[in-house]
Length: 494
Image 1 (cartoon, rainbow, N blue to C red):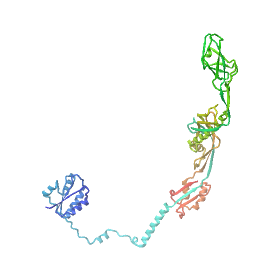
Image 2 (cartoon, one colour):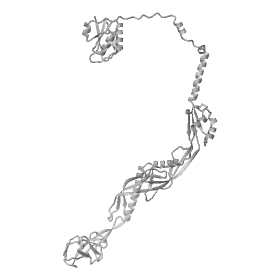
Image 3 (cartoon, one colour):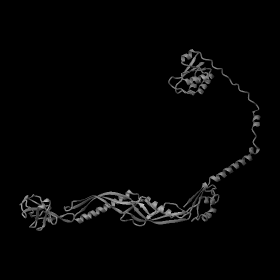
Image 4 (cartoon, rainbow, N blue to C red):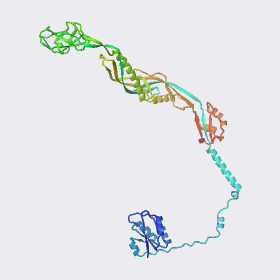
């Protein structure tokens, strides 16, 4: 018997397989499952395909090794084969005969049965007037519900107001760790390093060393031994001016033996000129064996007048540079803290001078004096949060019952901070805030709900001690009464 072989693919489903069956023109149709691809056909899909094959006058068979598909097919009476060859050689079992369903003759008394089963509506419900009345009642009910839930009202009340003010003596210290209602608060320390370089034109004249003084000193032996006096031996006069011998000399042995040696001042200038008998000190251990003096004055030291910076010029330039550094340091310190924090300026000081160089150095000539400085400044400050917490704690401790604050307190420093020797900074704060009398919302609801705004304003003023008439806004604006439900009434105080 002719057999139509249809090989299934992985993308086939019930619809596509059914379409392929429709094209078959043979009494047998064989569906072949692919070996490696998966075709998803449920038992219900197989039942539908079997019926469709029956409607085409053909018998459906399957070729598959999948155990689940074989079980489903066998439960439906669909023959299953291992290969297409066996399906064509082996006989197919006869398909079960189809059973046609013969419809029953329709009953002709269905209308009477329906009328006997279902009760008839009351005449008032079927009449036009009854329907109008029912619709009207429904509309009234909806409007009644809307009148309860839709209207909303906002009440702005102006209760009695009082200004609370207090002056707090504050003591800020680095050793304080917590805030106390007595006025103790912690202070923080910060530092900033700034540098500057500035020049100053010099018009002053200074006396610059020009030549060194020279002369002769006499060394006297204080021992019995001969003493070797090498060149460069240093002697000092009463003004601490130092001189050095120019030659190597032997001092003869014996007490009070002496020798004269030429000397020269170590530094040029008139300070090297010395009067007679003013050089009396021998530096080093040699001074234990010999003594020294100058029988004659030392002369030849001289100075010349040149343009150069005096001590006054250096002090003037340093003062200008320090002023600039202080301003820069203060700006840097303020940038490190919040704008509302208070910088204690009386604690602003020089922590250390890192660098201070004058060019040219003191005593050297020059038409321009340059100063390079790097200085570290430090100061202490008080946090704005600490001051606000102190203000709030102090005000709350003295608040009147029945009143509540509407905003955070405002404070201002009314005295300049002053720091004592122990490092505690003292100043005074003036703290103020506005208190409003507390309003019982439930009392407001009981007064206003369901009333017209004009009729309750005077009652609200008298019962709640308001300082002015309340403002009432109703939504929608054309609604004349306040809501009955408290949740739809919003109460604000100002």
